[in-house]
Amino acid sequence: MSSRLTGTNRRGFLRGFGAALALPALESFRPLLAAGAQRAIGTTASGAPLRMAWLYIPNGVNMELWRPKGSSSKYQAGETFKPMAALRDDFQIFTGFEQKNAMAGGDGPGDHARGVATFLTSARARKTAGSDISLGISADQVAAQAAQTLTRLPSLELSADGVRKAGNCDSGYSCAYQFNLSWRSETQPMTPESNPRAVFERLFGAGGSKERADSLGQRYASKKSVLDFVQQDAKALHKHLGRADRHKLDEYLTGVREIERQIEKAEALGLPRDPGVPAPDDKPGTYQEQLRLMMYMMVLAFKTDSTRISTFLMAHDGSNRSFPEIGVSEGHHNISHHQGKAGNLEKIAKIDYFYMEQLAYFLDKLKHTPDVDGKSLLHNSMIVYGGCISDGNRHNHDDLPILVAGHAGGAFSPGGHVELGDNVPLSNLHLRMLDEFGVKTPRFGDSSGSLRKV
Image 1 (cartoon, rainbow, N blue to C red):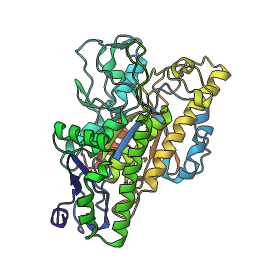
Image 2: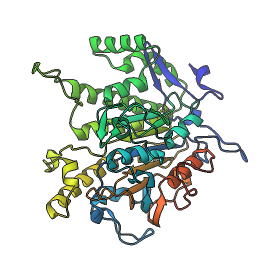
Image 3: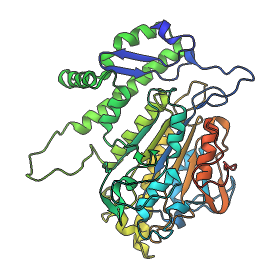
Image 4: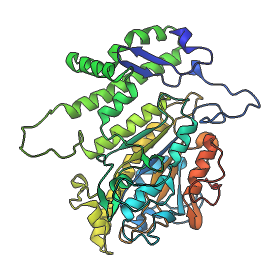
């Protein structure tokens, strides 16, 4: 074990039959950056891994309660940001971004499909409901292709919606546009995973598909945790760690087991009696539990350096999900066409607040997870949260609701409200993030230059 985890090989795993747990950031394996050395792709100035993630919210927001008053660090946050009060110094709010290629531009209706498609690609989607889809590579995949040898998974694509890759979903646009944030190429979306169990198995499975399936079958049959299959390796590693690293490893393994318990709890009710009709798409647990499970696994993926790049489609534009748990029984998309009615705007604000609570949960987890350089995962991350529609009633793609969290290892200066002026391409932010990640390119999508105010 020790020989496999020393020297320049810092990709450590605990292994067992059909299972592999990537190790968390341990001080023993801290990557040191020699004086004067150039930063490697996907690292901070300290040599720690640099993470990037994009979280998408649908249907626009209540802009009156989103938009801050004042600028710089003295801004007054809108009502929507109350759940983020304790994290104020760890994020910044931007006004002035647009996605021009999400606008109609002669293509007519279809703002929901164009919004999701354009958010990360900054490219115009070919209007088609057939197989001749065409868009562009997304920013996350530009980074993933440059850093594909650094981690076990080049990137992690998540969704809390069903997966759709074909069919007519929005006014003549293919469902592929509306249900996929990440695109490997102009014609190939990166299909996101919406089942927490499948995400967990992808992160912690090993070997071929049959071995992983056999391992999962054994765990179901024996009621054992994935940890039971790697315990011998864990014990061997324990002997070679200092006190602080032993504590960190134990804490990490406890966290892995806890997420298994959450998933098992969600699955415990089993299948109901056959109703005699096809089953709709379903997710374990409540929507909040679904979101938080996915977010927790993003934290685990970053913590173990299983990947440094992730996208999360919390819901697609056009989603008509209701939120009875917060007193909103109507569909989100329906009330987003608020027509200026106070009752609808109030319900939109409740949904905005709900999503912000989930973001606060995610960022808090990152902030309280130590990284290899003694900082936190949040310090060494670039997290974009927002959507490609501002006001759902207008379906506009300017004045976008965008928040950027994390310090990018010290390269970003969060804690303020950044007023950019009007009509700044969102691709300028993507370009800046790629630059910080170590991917040097003069242009991305419709960018007019790398954003300096971050």
